[in-house]
Amino acid sequence: MIPGLANRRRFADLSEQEVLALAISSEEDDARIYRQYAEHLRAEYPSSAAVFEGMAAEEDHHRQSLIERHQARFGDVIPLIRREHVAGFYARKPIWLTKNLPLETIRAEAEAMEREAGKFYTLAAQRTSDAATRKLLGDLAAAEMGHEKKATQLEAKHLPEETKEEEDRAAHRQFILTWVQPGLAGLMDGSVSTLAPIFATAFATQDTWTTFLVGLAASVGAGISMGFTEAAHDDGVISGRGSPVKRGFASGIMTTVGGLGHALPYLIPDFWTATVIAMIVVFVELWAIAWIQNRYMETPFMRAVMQVVLGGALVFAAGVLIGGG
Image: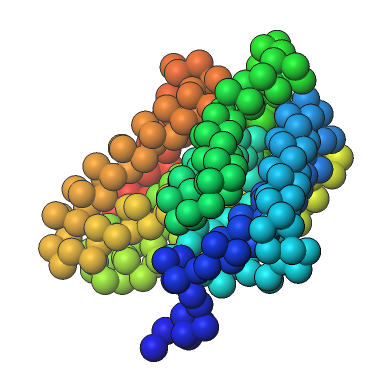
């Protein structure tokens, strides 16, 4: 039996009192999540934070309505039952996993939360025979399903279009600084710096396995070096470039990927087949880097081509000449 499932109840087996208790605890959790989002966004996106504060206040109102209905039917003692106690029930991502999400992802998570809550209240309303409880749960289902309209009203109040655009630009800039820029630097370093040792080894030995080992060592070593360098040289506090751990991972992983791209073909035993495929991979890598520079860093495409493709071609030629000589 899967650990943890033995002590969980099926939703269909819950009593009407337990369904109400589950709804109360779920509203409490959702209000906390919205306030956590608001706290996370307050410094950089104060208008979006105000929207989430308003959504938390709505959840508080729902919770109070549910508590009053429970008191009227079952008294003041509310059973302790939470989402994790019910098998197959929808779950929320832990705050410590979601607090660092970008702004657009947080908005999407909030929309998903409202949809899931609406489905829950629809099912819960079908489970009760009490007219007042059924009406309340049905109203809450409609409210949760309609929170997109409520969110729009809150955005109109706290987040006018120009402010939203400004926050979106700031979020996009943060994404570029934290992920794209270090990842692109790593991809460029991995793709270009490993060209010479890999192709020099290839043409010097014409041994595909040896070439692969050299490429693997160069790629992994460069990835580790770039990752630690990126994480250590800037903690992101003054520069605003974001978490050094995230930037380190982005740079290190992309450096390794960039080198492995033209090392992996040398797993093919035939030297010339492996070399031709590796050359094709190099061509694709360099043009991809030029496209990323143009797309995300707003570098003019031809300038990006001159910087990356021409530079890579020179390093490649150096490796071939050294290995062939």
